[in-house]
Every structure is written in structure tokens, then in C-alpha cells.
Image (cartoon, rainbow, N blue to C red; front, top):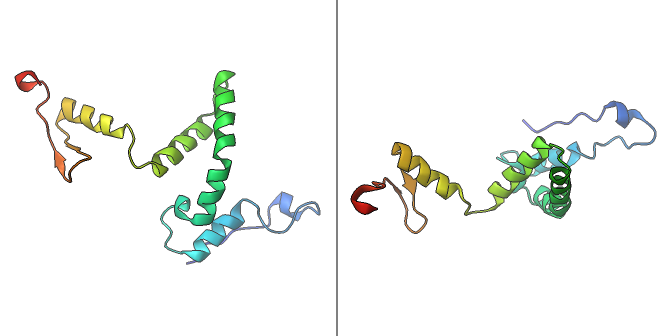
Amino acid sequence: MPARCSTRGIRDRSDRFSSSSLLLDPVRQAFTRDPALANLLTDSSIAAEIQRAAPGWRRVISAAAAAGIPVPALAASLAYFDSYRTPRLPQNLTQGQRDAFGAHTFERVEKPGFIHFDWGVDGN
């Protein structure tokens, strides 16, 4: 089923605004191009727009943090974006910690497969 967006919001009915939604039209277009799209960040148009806006996004979050103003949704969204676009991050450290404290295994980056390491055994 194709994505459908309402363009009948209160602001859209005003003479000052067009009948299309500036926020939702790109989302509708992305799903029109690829109805099986798993994540909007994988759509080339949306990804390009997010990349263009990222420096300002970072400045806003930095300024808010410096002023002591919590912006949890903006900060978490940026963290998600960064984790989605970056192939190798410190989550590998988290996997190692989970393995050390609960034998959950971890995946090494230099070879495929999950392993468990006996942390602290024999002087390790």
C-alpha cells in the first residue's frame, strides 16, 4: 500500500501556505520511489537533505547543552543518525563488556563470527 500524507492541516489551509506539506511530501515521495523502503535514511533524497542539515543540527544541540537546556529528542535523533551512517563505532566496546560480565559473545571486526573470550583467565 503506498504511503499517503494528509495535506489538510490547519496551516496548509491558510492562503500563506501551499497545499503540499513541506515535511511530509519528501517522505511520501521516498515511499513512492521505493514502497519497500526499510529506513528513510536510505533514501538518497532524504539522506542528502539530512547530510546538508547535520552541521546546523549539531550546532543547535551543542548550544543547548552549553546553555544547560535539555533537548533529548534532538540529541537522541542525532545519535541515531550518527550510529546509522557509521560502520564502526564504540558499540564494539559495549559488546566486549557484555561478554565479560555475562558471556554474551561478541563479533570481532577482523574475522566473521561471534566468539566468547574468557576475560581475566590466565592473566588476560
